[in-house]
Image 1 (cartoon, rainbow, N blue to C red):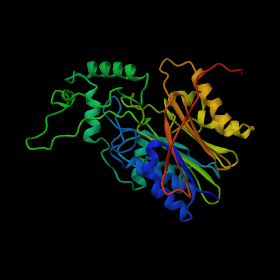
Image 2: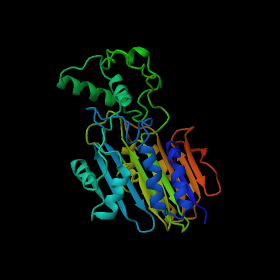
Image 3: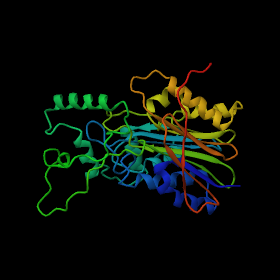
Image 4: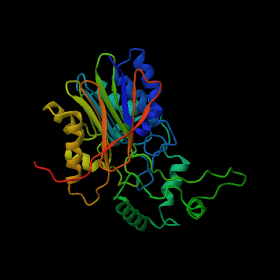
Length: 345
């Protein structure tokens, strides 16, 4: 049976260890965790794990979920601070607790009990990016909170693409924004605002037994209100897998996927006889039709029960990655663009 990995474009860094695991006879859940964990450890990815962009208070909070399509077992964590391995912790929830979702201080407590390694998630570069969107000086607390809330509202039109210009002018990385570097310190590399990822990594895997699993991990909406949870830790919104029908996972504006249970809707459409492409089209059209003053892109990857992958986006030109057992490396493919249009109910 063909082995398969499919996911968001930034997942490619995690495909080599995941495919190696599948080829050695490992299961789909283990492969998903391996792939996502590699992205969480990558400090150059400011949408996930270590190096993720922080909330409006400058704190990095992580969300993740994991689902086993063979058993429908799930585990998820939200607003996790101080630990990088959100997908591993979602696995702990799935395997050891009678719960599905654990958040905040409880998630951090569980991470400590599971002996995950604590880490300061805020890297210097992520902090510089975060500070670059603030005033040149930090005001008192009340004015600061008001200012950042204004920033959040302004960014909400496309929350996972914080700035249309990916490279900031040099003066924005100067001492007026961030503390000065000590004498003799190396010159920091140019400050780059992420513009090519969607605030999330997701991966769907199919193992040699034909079982499906999917996982999602994110640092969420940069400059978000503390404690905000998007679709990533919500099983059925950002992530769903059922061997009988297929699997789906989302990136983009999570609030839209939450309101429509987008991942679940794709799988359920296949359950009731829709093809994979039809199921994805229906979900994307529902997203276009959703009234949302902060509407932005949503992207969906999916696999049907026969192991056929596909992906769509509500905007044009987006990509995803696929690797099958006969492929030496992941292949970048363009997502099918589904434009908005009215349709009969």
